[in-house]
Image (tube, rainbow, N blue to C red):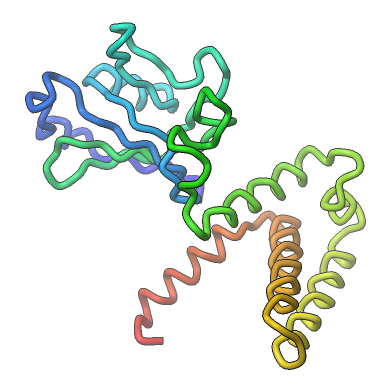
Length: 214
């Protein structure tokens, strides 16, 4: 899931730079959650620099120079993919944000409310990954990782049983609560094996493609 996808360089020749006087709008999207992070503008030099450095770089119309997002704050946008729309006059950049994208501290320049309904699962996945690598003291997730796979497996089993019981014997609020606990502990179990929710989603998508009527 970490592979970088970039449209072939031969598409550059077909880009319609003239329509925007040498600039193309570049929509930046969170590569996992799908959240729209910001809109910027690229000229040919900014596009080349983005490819070269692996960090999203724009042409600043106010500063009249290349501008790498996060060059002062450190909240850079790590490049994951670049795609071109059907009219060859707009770029879609998928990126991994390192910190909030907006200078006001929100994840998106359009406000945190624009996150897709399932987008938080990507944030949860990323948070569990950080807990696995950083192991902050006092964190329940840290404790699970330190107790090891058997304890994590036990928790997944417990939450699975409690979720099943809620399906048949409890209300919607209880079912949602148990399902949330199960998804969290399953995310921890996957990460303990070096896997992620994104890997599960990719497998489900491939199964659907093979058997769309399922």
